[in-house]
Length: 282
Image 1 (cartoon, rainbow, N blue to C red):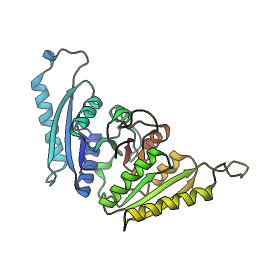
Image 2 (image 1 turned 180 degrees about the vertical axis):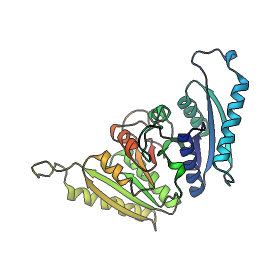
Image 3 (image 1 turned 90 degrees about the horizontal axis):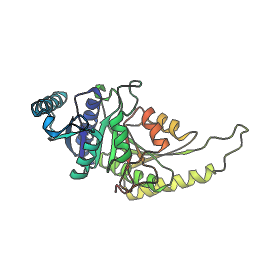
Image 4 (image 1 turned 120 degrees about the vertical axis):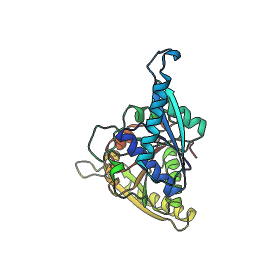
């Protein structure tokens, strides 16, 4: 992730996002694109906008960002945006700047350490032209953060192949390990197996892991095959992970991070940062 766009407004959620963006940039050699959006009243004439208040807001936001990351060696490119929608402004900027990822924080609601996107995050996840990373609540207060173990949700679908490719690249670039996670439906109450053949899936998962080991020489690849609901399993895996990568759902515009039911639930319950990658992102 070379071009990392982070939306910052001085809130606790945006501070979480800024710390995640800084970690991704520092560990992966990327550049932070710091964006502040001054929200305009809907239907307000352009002449009615208080330009001094707008300028003061941007000065304050960028000052807060500098204070949040004092002495950081990372060069922050600053973008000032005015729009009635922060999500729309960030989406447009991501397209103009060919961003690799947009980083946002979770809403202030929910338990500490859990991801619960606010309205900006929800809208971004429905239409972003690039990957979207969401930092858990309280992330900025973590004493240590590394990217030693990257997890990826995999089910053999085209969108999960895109996520697998991105997760592999991240793990390789960050000199971490990769955990490929596949989930099968739980057994029936009578103890009978569901129609999917667990042994066959295990063999297929092992073949995928071997393919990655051959393509990314030296990369440690773990294989996890668990029974249960996809969202609860992935959220539980997030306890061990430093980052979880998921693909967007399999319909809609190709370069859009459209959110499906599983990914929507995971980003609400995972204790680690989650990256949703749109199809065609490669």
